[in-house]
Image (tube, rainbow, N blue to C red; front, side, top):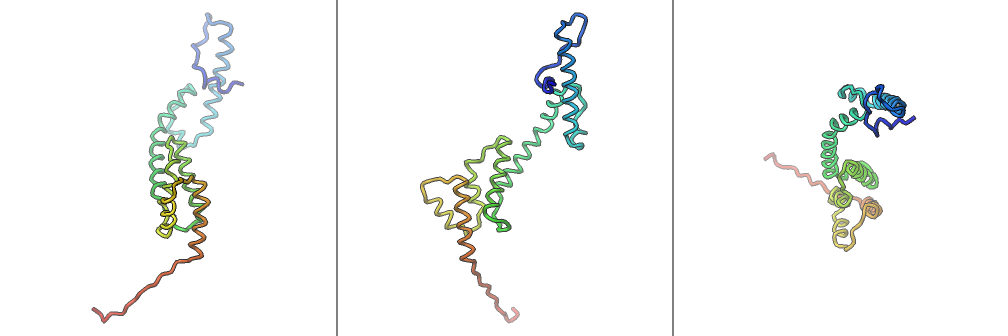
Length: 180
């Protein structure tokens, strides 16, 4: 069965007595393809989305409406993902490797929405690091070569291990006043 026939071809005019012998079978196959495609799409779209899409007679019309309806959703998702990527901070709640993977996944989602942030991703990752990674960032900025995300993801966990071994030391100073 040519399920995609209705997606690839416009509907022919209705069959009449003047129609050629080739048009009748094509019309029947197109009608079947159109019905099956519409049914398949309606079955696979969530109910809360389905209710916002008007009933149409043509699968191509259905797709055009869906595209128009959700174009603005892509724009808002792009803005949300960009904001998340640019403000994300490494907070040690997960490993450095998982932090980099999460940022890489956001960049990949942005790429599917038409935004290429690959060239900025290393800088976004470096900017997400806390101040303890200052020497690492200085080292990166002083070398001539630019690293890609793979090189960065192999270097940062080493620095994370170094910082864990080194540990953080802090002193809390408390004083006792005379009530003033």
